[in-house]
Image 1 (cartoon, rainbow, N blue to C red):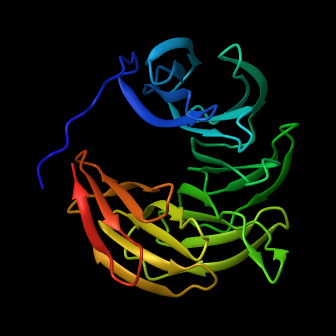
Image 2: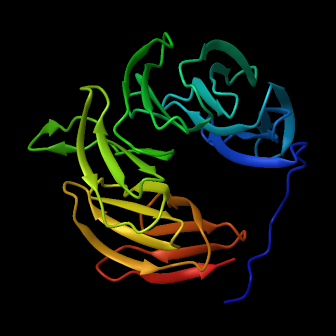
Image 3: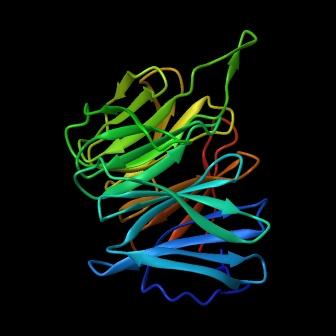
Length: 280
């Protein structure tokens, strides 16, 4: 398949970009990054015009991750300065306003994710911990220390209803300890450990229906894990380099994977057989 061409580009002052997210129904784009060891922050762009409307670059080190609450009114910025910033997003004024600074991690924070109801924020760190915060007050509710090495990634399972009753929120994490772990942050317990990975796990993503969990990392292998057990249902060699990112399309039929070389591959994951759907 021929290489895809970029349809547009956005000028960005960060020498390193680590994460981005859309907000306000796709009308705003947040780009996180910075200069390692020197500065970091977030840029807010009007979208799709690509016009910069706000620049917050006062962090002492790289911003590693940006997350937007389901309601779109709160933004979390994780950083290698060991801190997480909570910001209020005023979509009308197209402006981010400071709310809270979370300082309980002792090492760089690598991931942040809001629960589907927006009440909880979960963060993961080089300090091997996963912390659960009240998203409104910024108060630390609990900390998990079950992982035995760096925790790289987090992903919340979409809202799931079984027998007419909502299932408690599950959050998956991936680590250098070669495991994926599933948690119930609001209840304060670990649900299961998924072993079988032969290298660090850098990315996890739930399917849109919550029935499957995808994982990938240093091996260049993508795995499909049963959403309600520790069984690995399928795996395949997807990249020749480390995989750092996974994302599902809105319809849940296409999985995108990105590696250290800058390559992106698309996979058709709708059905029993996984098929390549393109690359660029």
